[in-house]
Image 1 (cartoon, rainbow, N blue to C red):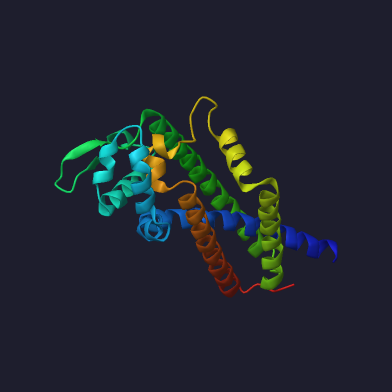
Image 2: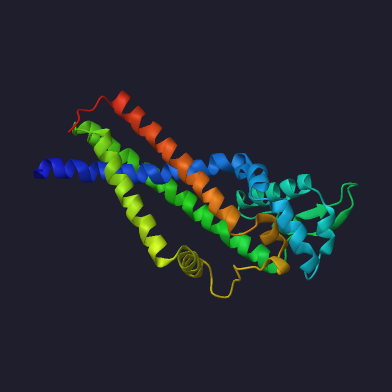
Length: 244
């Protein structure tokens, strides 16, 4: 491989990784519009059974056991809506009986603080993705202006998926639980609680953490990769690039 070919691969690698990040963000936004398919995961993960088993041990708000699955779905949707709006309305989320009687507030103060931290992080990632989108446009513009060839799609995919595989293997070797804890410790303020036991948290029970998070992560990963592949095919088709 000569220097020119190497430079071509590096340039396209930067573009590919940037566009992959944007596709993951787009996957998040699309999934948020359907509440991350919570009703589907609710059934698959048997969250209703988790709620029934946990609530007798719950230290407070035992009235939660009286609400049905439709109310569970609505509450999760309310949390998603708040997260998508910088955390607004989190302290107003309440749960109701089938007759419409208000039974209590869903979130504790610590949970509200944590979810606002999450919403703030999403806002930052949103702006970062905007900057990445502009970067990708600049790179793609340079590629078009200087008539830089596009690597064969198979080679490009192998390169990017190799990086993803290495990252996943490292996480597995380090321990997914340890990595999850480390990531939270780095991202969120030291004095802000981010781990909640089922017996103390309606939120954790409603989400069957961390199982729901793992399921949604796989959903986002698959959707993001599919969007990215379609995008690369379209770029190749309409850009009419030479291949190397």
